[in-house]
Length: 608
Image (tube, rainbow, N blue to C red; front, side, top):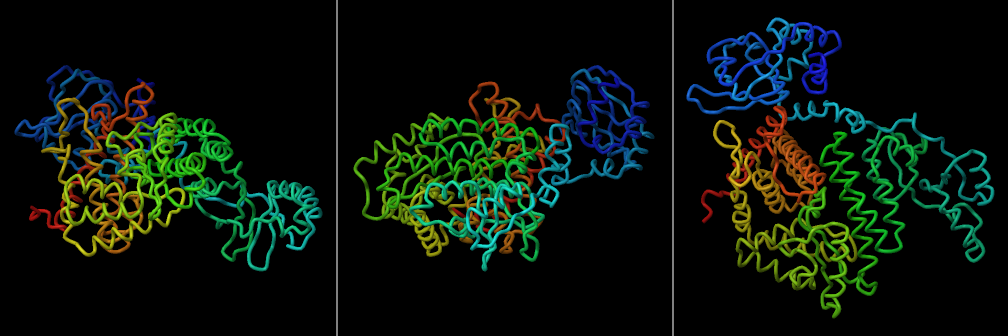
């Protein structure tokens, strides 16, 4: 019994209890057994215990015998009725032989009285319960990390030199101070000199006449403010491939140097190693090897409780570096300033975490269409095959002529989407609107988005028909907040069709109307809040609902991956704990509410 109770310490709300409170519960709790059909709490009766399920299941039914909820391992019930001193409005019936803990009413009330967080859990909102979820044992390690900020305790002393200091003298100063870099105090900002710059000096000092330190500095240097979030700094260093960052105070004075090796000590993932390996790659095989390490990093971050949107941002940044490297190696150099590589779909929205499918395209400048494009694009896709990106079943890849052509042909498509719309054309329009350029002549993509905005602005009624797709799939949440299952997938729901699509597409339609250029759904929600369309409360609920869906889907997909199964968008609701099921239900309710907002805004009830 003691061992079983100890396991509860990893689950909210028991994570809030101190040692004394847990000992008291342990000394008064009893293990009980109940056979099938036992009524634990009858309608209009007061529970005398808080029930915590060890094994078995309990169904909750109303007076009409309608199923309201089901409780499984680690779920608990009876607490709200005890706290509110109100008889139960439902019946709690054992449907699978039950073994449970029973915590007496008086002991439970004392625990609530002495610990407000423990009591508050029973009435907490979706946002609050997401935070509580991270208090589980497997999440605890990273919880502090995501709010950790840089401070002077992890900084190295800066070594500052003047721009006219001789290079050899500066190098001696660096060695004397035991520093790994130098800062150059220029009249208009700081420069930085690292080992890489000294290597450049050794190789080119004669031919380029290098004498002063200012001649080999990187200027201006990238810097951060003291107090910045460590995770944001990791993203910045990954994006720019740098190992040293000056940290400035409010007056822009240097307070120290943050080194990547120290930052990585806060993280146990391979993001830097993957990035460095990718950037140093001299051949395609090295790029492939680096990209294949992503799944290990993703799994480690997920287990430690990092929010799925943060994982997606980091993965997206690394993937974009990968695509840029592939563009540099595979696309002929004579093309590279005449075309742009764009990512579409979830890659374009920076929301793809695991490799689900390829979504990419090439846009060539007007009048340019190389003859050997087929062989080049085929090679590009084959490399992505080797990395592990499944081919898009819908053909949204550069090997399809539809997604590999000059800019004027794309403009013809956009014109056609608006002037002669169909369901299939709206899909293409949605896919393209979520696209982002990652390499080559990126202004080509900007020109196309500008053209799309102008055409929609000229025909605003198109938005009504575009937004209507949110009604394509029914919510998996039925009457009495019960999950509606697919017949072919018992006890599973398709989280993409049943939840994510309506949320993402509704936000997409509003972003198109408001000419929001951000492609990431969370960023679009923030922009809709900033311009006043969404209230802060609605925006927060949508972002947290998105987090719930993506976290549950990622957890399910990682399990599928570990078992060698094909990755899909189904999640098993019976394998979720009570907290996760409640979060999922609340998130689905948020999406249903949002669908009504979108429907009312675009007058979808009158769209033919």
